[in-house]
Image 1: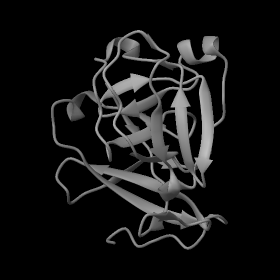
Image 2: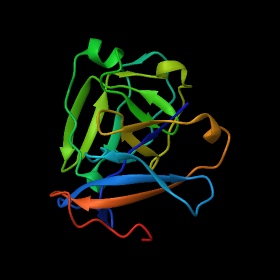
Image 3: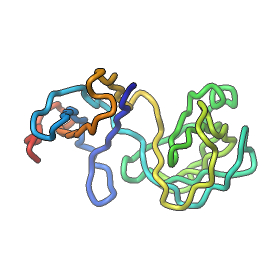
Image 4: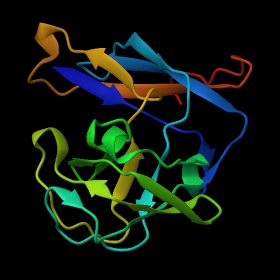
Amino acid sequence: AEIWLGASGGSSGAADPNWGGALVWASLDNLTFQKITTITAPLRQGFLTAPLLMATGYDTADALSVDLTESAGALTTATQAAAQAGQTLCLVDGELLGFASATLTAAYKYNLTVLPRGMYGTTAAAHSTAAPFARLDGAVAQYALPANFIGQTVYLKFQSFNVFGGGLEDLSN
């Protein structure tokens, strides 16, 4: 069992170019925390700007429209083979999917097409406008859960730092 973690710094829906990453702390009692990993790159995250219809298999008819302003994310086109192999893996509402074509429509806004849907055993589904979107790549920190964490509530704190590795926030904040 693992927890996959990602973050991007900013406020009011806009990315902060001075955000450098975050130390991630975990606790089972929400009182005593231990550092479990460090996030060193912003997660390319945002939300859908239009609904995505339900489709299964390899969807060549629909576009996944996303706004990545909150993370200042950029996406690039890949080959169909790369998309089918999970090299452009994304998460939308619990569905894992990929994309072969990324078309920039405005600053940090994309239409993603040629979509392998329902990847890795997830259920392909319809998704509404404003559904959360995340690109799952090297910016995602993975933490293998110790056996005593499995089945328990895990409390997390993200302690941000700047691009120089300094300016560490107080953990109580």
